[in-house]
Image 1 (tube, rainbow, N blue to C red):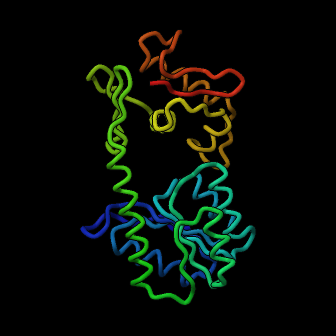
Image 2 (spheres, rainbow, N blue to C red):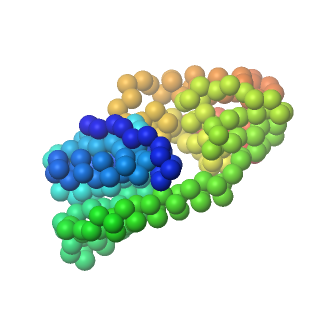
Length: 238
């Protein structure tokens, strides 16, 4: 399992996860991504791939279909069922039209068949990452009440003063604030914020919600923005 890469003039330090059981191809792709300034993570089987996808939340996944354990289609299905919207490029020797259609229907963003030309693959990956940057730039700051959230800088201000949040507090706030009015169950929040295989309980979510209310709400006991949805979980109201 490779973890590396440092920013260079070419890349922007984004994280790319390569899920591929062929060692030489897996390591070759990781090396090429790192040379371009990206952080590369690698997994050799389906179980490791899905765990890294949930725990590390990469900016893009290059995904083989024929993997030990469960295959790439299963990984893709699990990601989309839990509404993890990371861009996925399928890289597979399965080049039938039916395979490509199945991949796109399950939520793939691009599909490249083996054998492939490395410059084309790199261009497709970088194009997908550029679109992601434009989307984040368009999102901009999120404001509600006295609160201003800057997703890119990972900062939060209340009435103009910066509020210090733990990393998971910020991730939880961003999930809710990025989907105003939408209720999330505690289980979904655990999946989206803490990741695959987290050993805690839904009580963890309650504790973090309590902490956010204390830091951000004028009256934490009667929250205006971070509200409880009975028998469901929590939502954020603007």
